[in-house]
Amino acid sequence: MPAPRPTSTAAGRPVLPAVGLHRFNEADPGAAEEALLACCGSHRWALRLTAHRPYPDLDSLLAAASEASYDLRPSDLAEALADESWMPQPLLGMRAPGSQAAHTALRAAHAAYEARFGHVFVVCLDGVEPEEMLDAVLSSIRTRLANEPDEERLVAAEQLRRIALHRLEHLVASGSS
Image 1 (cartoon, helix red, strand yellow):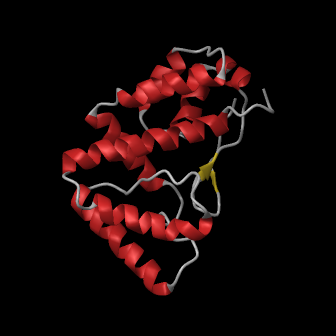
Image 2: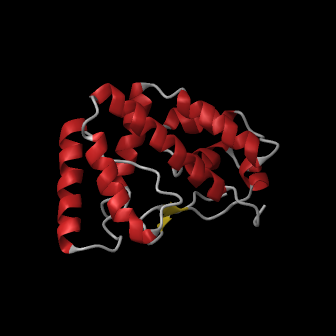
């Protein structure tokens, strides 16, 4: 199983090619780990999920991924957040429709967030309509800028967990098992 190559949706979120649960379970460990790293950039998370294969069904895989996410150490979280920063996509929300002033405010908010917390802003936007994304991202950044660093680490970890689960679900979507 070759490592999936993320592409982007109009919202800038990565979309991974579906490989099917059977192919994921049968893949050699290196290929499975690479596929999982496209879902979450923590090597420890990817190794843990790879080591516990095979998964009988998608729900079991997602439960294991969620549990592994809750067990991320601060260094694992930092690794995953750093991985998010290299994704070839514009700042979160920049492709959403909106005025130039709103986009300027969003760029400034992203910069303020990174300066305050030392990592990129992450938020799970599944279920948010494209025309609402810019406002949702800007509102979320502004709200989270008020968090203390320890509190924000927890919020960012939860957002990464949700993003990883959605990416993983797309990765093993049936159809090419």
